[in-house]
Image (cartoon, rainbow, N blue to C red; front, side, top):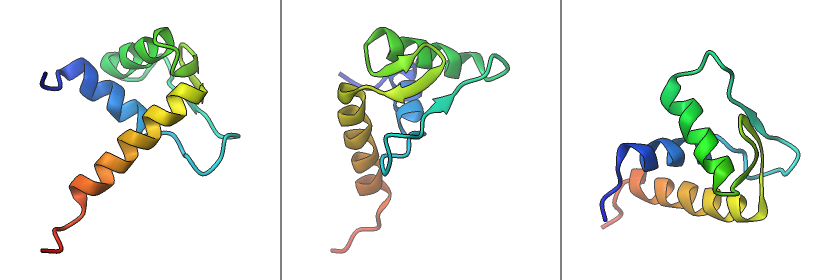
Length: 81
């Protein structure tokens, strides 16, 4: 199943989190782009973040963000072959 726009926006939100600390969350303001607001709400509905406008990662959200950020690092790193 290919990534659709909704999934891409959710991945973008997960990439905003700093995984080096559990004391730092995010806040998506009402003036943000509608697709960002909607993606954040979906992540909250899925139990990945603590608030519908951001907040902190849940344990499952931390796993998801870690995987997402690792994948992004792999994809943007130049090939060593």
